[in-house]
Structures are given as structure tokens and as C-alpha cells.
Length: 319
Image (cartoon, rainbow, N blue to C red; front, side, top):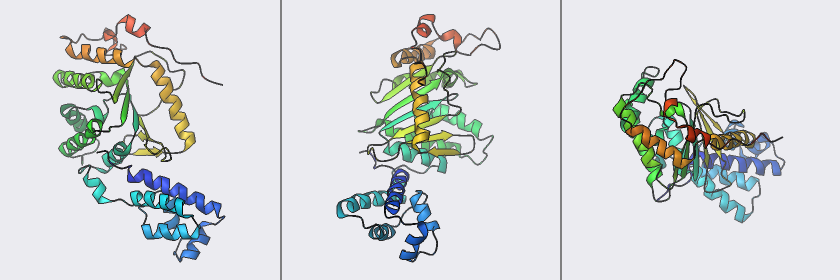
């Protein structure tokens, strides 16, 4: 069975609803806290920003202050209970580090996920051997990484793609993400075969962006993942992946930019069927010829001219 919408998304939704109710009543943070006898505004501010797990009793008190009618009140109580969910919810995901938990929580409650990776295979699509080697490299920068624990965590996260009601997952990969990248040939080929196999699932779409294909001047600067949720009122979210930390975006303006990026990259990428055929052919080729020069893309020699010619060109920018 699918997990309920993730607590972090419910907290963001609850906070936005409570902030709107307070403004409807034309109350300041200070006025609300004074009525409830709260020592400072920081508690209410954190609830409205979705930064803390709310106490249901506090939410009920706020609904009283805001004079919320019965039907709206019941709907908000359901959201508040989801937002207050704690350790029991996490047990369904298994033990994992803080950064992986953030992604796992979003993935577990998502209806759709679109992920862009310029250099590596996304965690949801990695084989154990590939993940182990990539995490071994990451350990050079972060010595406290428990490689085997993180590999197990990735496998737990990947179960979301195989459950009875999975999200629809789309991976947009630059060609570099499909390159050997110093990996042992056996690990690399196994990973490519795994990608080709996963792409046959009805809920998984993998698209490769060929080298040299433009996206109309719009291009992401970092890896990112965009999430939507079964309840359309829950805030769509973009997670930006950085070297040391990640950034969560929920504003309509930010999401609009990334919607444009996704549309342009989908226009530029190879169709899903051609991507699957390309991955399978790369995995099964018996030899790996070297690039002819230092500036050549490591996989450029693999792309047949007719494949590149068939790539749809991006739409012109809208005024």
C-alpha cells in the first residue's frame, strides 16, 4: 500500500493554511500568541513556516481563535494529524541518514517525480555495486559516511517504484551520467542494463539528453528533483542537490522556473524508446573505443547520426 503524504509536505500545507486563516482574521503573530498565552511568536512562526511538528492541541487552539467552521476545521485536523506524524512513519522507510530521509519522505508520498542528473545515475535507479562505488568516492569528502548503510537505504528508497500504486518517475539524464566515469566496466554495464530494464516499467520513464543539443537557453545549474502529490492542494516541491546540503523550494515562482526547465529538457531529450535502445546497446557492446581527442564526449561515438537527427528541437522561448 502507498504511504500517506509525507509529514514535511503536510507541515508546509498546514502552515500555509493557518497563516491564511490568521490574515483573514486580520491578526498579527503577537496578537494570536497573546490570546493563547504563548511566550513568544517564534512557536507560531515555526508552525506557519512548516518548520516544526505541530502539537494537535495547539492547532485546535488556533482554529478556535480563527473561528474556523466545522467542515473546514475537520479537514485541517486531518492535515494536522498527518503533519504531526513522527517516528512511526519513519519506521516504514528503514534507517537512513538525514539527507536521504528528506528525499525518501518526498518520494514516498509523491504522485509524480521528475529528476534531472547531469553526471551520475539517480539514487532511485542505482544498482548496489554502482551505489557502493559512488558512495566510496563521496566518502573522500565526507569521511563519516557509512557506505553500506547508505547502500541499504537506497534499496529501501527504490521500493517506492515497485509498490502497488507507485509514483510516475521520470529521469532526465545528461550523456555524462551514462558514461563509465572511471567505473569498472562490469559495474558500468550492469548499471546500464538495469536502467534499460527499469525503463520498461509503465511508471518509469528515462530520457537521455544528447551532447550538443540545446534547450533554448534554459538549463539547470544543479541536479534537482520535482515532486507533485496526490492531493493537489499539497505544495509541489523542488529539491536542489548541492555538494554539502540540499535546498527545498515550494514557492509558485520557483516552481514555475523549474517547470520551464523540465519542458525544455523533455523537448531536447531522446524519446524514451530510443533512450532504452541506446542504453541496451551500450551495455551489450563488446568493446569501449576511446574518444579520438581530449575534447570529445566519452559517449559521442556511440550515438548514431539518425538518432541525433530525430531528436525534437525545443520550442522557441515565449514572450
